[in-house]
Structures are given as C-alpha cells and as structure tokens.
Length: 447
Image 1 (cartoon, rainbow, N blue to C red):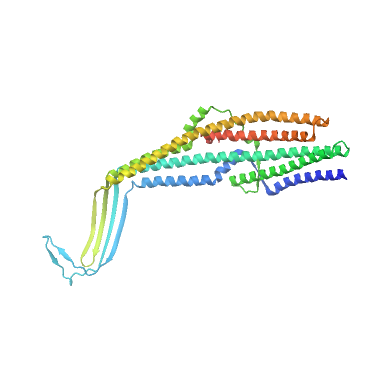
Image 2 (cartoon, rainbow, N blue to C red):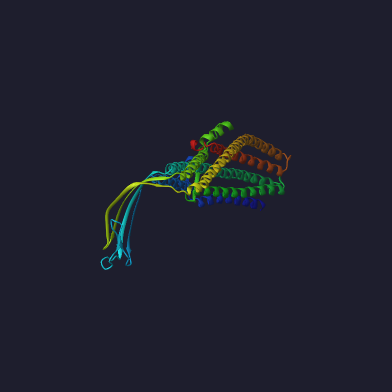
C-alpha cells in the first residue's frame, strides 16, 4: 500500500510537469523562429520611440524650410469698403487756397480702396542667414538624437532577447534536474520498500522533488513573461511563442583598452555630436540677437486703387522704392537678448562637460562589467566540474552510509546552481559587451 502511494505521488509530479508544458503551448499557440538580428530589425520597424524620433526630425526639417522662407518676398493685399456720414469736404487748389464744397453738389456716403504691397528683404543684420544656419544645426542634432535612441533601442532588444534565453535555459535546467530527482525518488522508494532506507530520508528526497517542481513552475512563469515582453517589443501578437536561435547570440569579441574606447566615443557617440551641434546653434543664436542692433533694408513696391463715389477715383497708382527700418529701442533692449543667448550657450558647454564625464564613467563601468563577466564564466566552468564531481563522490559516500541524505541533496542543489550560474554568466557577458559598444558609440556600426 505504501509503495502504491509513493508511486502515485511520482505519477502526479510527472503529470504536473507535462501539464506545465501543455499550459505553455496553450498560452502561445503561434510559434515563430527568431534570430537576434531578426528581432533587432523588427524592433526598429515597430518601435514607437523611433517613430516619435521621425516626427521630431520632420519637425526640425520643416523649421529649416521656414527659416529659408524668410528670404522670400512678403506679398500683402488689403482692401476695405467704408460707409461714411455726410462729411464736410474742402478741396485744395494748386495755389493752396481752399473753398468749402457745396454739399448739394458733393455728397459722399461710401469709399472703397485696395492696396497690394510686396517687400523683398535686402539686409536684416544677418537674422535670416543665422536663422537658417541655426535651424540646420538643430535638424542635424535631431537626426543624431534619433541615431542615439536607435542604439538604445537595439541594446534594449539585445537585453530582452538574452533575458528570454536565460529564462528558457533556467526552465530547461530545472526540468532536467527535476527528471533526475524523480529517478532518485524511484530508487529511494525501492530502497525504503526493501527496508534499506529510513522513511525520514525518503521524505527528504521527495520534499526536494516538490521544491524543484515549484521552481520549475516559477521558471516557466518567468519564461512566459519574458516571451510576452519580447512580443510587445517586437510588435508581435502577445500569444506568439518565440523560438530563439542561440547561435545568433554571438560570443563577445576581443576588446580594446579603455583609452581606445574613450577615443572611439569622442568620434562616434551620437549624443555628444548632437550636443556639439546644439552649441553651434546657440552660438548663432547670439548672432541673431545681436542682429537687432542693425537696421533692416528692403525693396518694396505696391499698387493702390481707390474710389470715392461722387468725389474721387484713383487707378494705376504704382510705387516702388527702398525702405529702411530701425528701432531705436534696440539700443537698450537687445543687450538682455544677447545675454540670454550667451547664457544658453554656457549651459550647453556645462552639459558637454557633464556628458563627457558620464561617457568616461559608462565606458569604465561597462568595461569592468565585461571583465567580471568573463571571470565569472571561467569560475563557473570550474564550478560545474567541481559540483559534478562532488555529487558523484557524495552519492558514492551515501551509498556506503558515510554521509546523510541532506548532504546528498545539498550536493545535487549545488550542481544545479553551478549550471544555472554558468548559463547566466555567458548570457550576461553578451549584454555587457554590447553595453560597452554602446558606451563607445560603436553599437550601430556592429549591427
């Protein structure tokens, strides 16, 4: 009867394991093979953040066109129809004398006039030229911001892809360990049945199997969440099961020195180039503010037509000339504008210094993380061999009644943990390497 109950317990464990995988299949009825490069291409295509970047680039491009349009002539047309009371009208003669008009002879109750005027700027103190220059700098900066965000999106995709790989690897290793634990349960059941094993030791082994079963459910749950997160990032239906190509997760290549990465960053980081362009735009902003000190000169022309029924009719009144405009208040108002523009330039210079320091820290941090990751791989490779050998020795001692069941189970847990640590360390090394590339502005060139 005891043997039946124990066998039944093992059957329940097996049923739970099968049901966990069938549940995964139910949650993800659609499967899709996806290499890392394919994932990156999909993210770039569907990323909402990158779509927002395109809109900002379009806005900056339109600002350049607007600045260039300032060079085009202004053309204005105006006209009015007026209702008048009975005005007193006095007409001037050539000699300068005036005589009251006879209101019985001249009656004015309305007036119509129209004016067309065109003005072409000849000189504006450099406002137009510097405005175009500044807008172009900001357009280029917007494009570099988009490239920088694209690099961040790619790194985030690599991180998510590797996390999915880690979740899957964890589930597979726990599943493998569970199968081994179930086989051990079977052996221990037979030993207990034949009176060669204490009941308490059998319960310890079965308890560990139960704990591993719970760990498997947790691992599968983490795998599901990582898969759903990847689906949402890629713009795929969230019930799509992503079948990864582990060979597409390339092993890190040999690295350069920190100094070499810092030099590469100065030449390749998009955010630093974008900030440099904004500094140039701020410099032209100072010139735009100083342009208020100078007058504006424009070529102008126009046409006037008017009709006052019963009194006056004007047609074919064409005019052309050159106009000069200068605001005397600019002598005391422009200084504040120039100071504001200079302050903006100083702010960007301070941001450049901060970004430069941050860049160096990011490279050093990523570099150290990569080195630690490589060291972990070496250590965990040895740990797997050590844990495997330790389990064999412990199992042999247990068979000879030299160690307790608890020590045997601890050796088994250490073996599983070593395998998990090694798998995770290899995956984390890939992320650390790509983070190092991003910090040096080299990630886009490698994708």
